[in-house]
Image 1 (tube, rainbow, N blue to C red):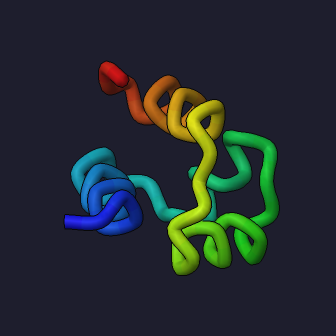
Image 2 (spheres, rainbow, N blue to C red):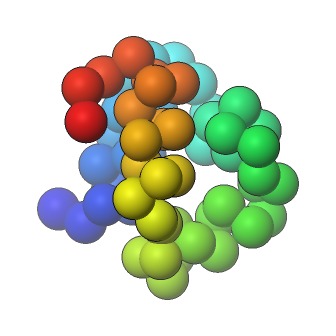
Amino acid sequence: MTTAEMIKELCEQMNISVSELARRIGQTPQNFNKKLKRETVTLDELKDIADVLGVKF
């Protein structure tokens, strides 16, 4: 399972769209989706995502 797949699955479990997640971490949905497709999400972004979704990193 890729990082992008895990993020999308967590979003589904938490009932939040990927676009909303992007906004909550301070990115545009377009930019964030590009990062997911390219698998270029940074460590700092992963920490922010974990905080927003309420999971341990």
